[in-house]
Image (cartoon, rainbow, N blue to C red; front, top):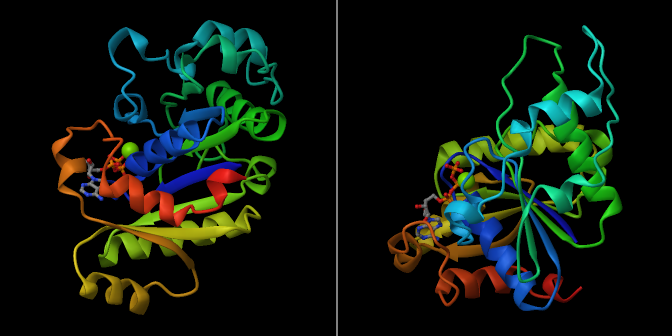
Length: 246
Ligand SMILES: Nc1ncnc2c1ncn2[C@@H]1O[C@H](COP(=O)(O)OP(=O)(O)OP(=O)(O)O)[C@@H](O)[C@H]1O
Ligand SMILES: [Mg+2]
């Protein structure tokens, strides 16, 4: 199972990603959890705190330069990355957590060694690892090359019942389709009423709705840590009914 999670800022991507990591882990599956959002907080949401947090991959400047063999403007687009998931990650129970880190944006058309390295790493994990893979991404889906995109089995866009996140979902869907991703669906989060559901059904056209998660006071009051026993987790499991057993 390879799942990528995107959506507009603040809709609940990290909460959904962390929830899914916990669901699969609790079913006894091995999971690789990847935080690909530059403003990383998947570690916190999963309870990897302080020294338990992994070192962000983009900070491994020396290693990245060695592996990409940068000479002047030239560098390798297929650096060695197969040892990275086990060396530069945090592990607990059956969960391996990797933080991609931040890559400075280059000018138009520029691909910097860090971003080539992260792309290669994501591609390696998607194509060669047999754990369940769950990626918490930003709306831009920038680390995703075509090969990686095509091995995503569940591309999940999280939306809230409001116009801006629905608009963003439409744009992400276009980007994703452009990369050849087929299984695109939506999780509607922070639902407070029947009107919220009706709003989504009316405004979100052409994307499969995988499930609804209500606004959950317990999630909010847990200050960033996903509560294991919560309505949020129950509804997320319902949305994934079947898939977590694959
Ligand atoms: N169903 C829910 N009910 C109540 N609060 C929620 C729910 N889902 C997420 N939240 C809260 O909303 C806030 C944003 O959630 P989260 O960090 O998961 O979103 P995000 O999309 O990852 O945000 P960012 O774009 O900043 O990475 C958090 O405080 C989280 O606890
Ligand atoms: Mg987040």
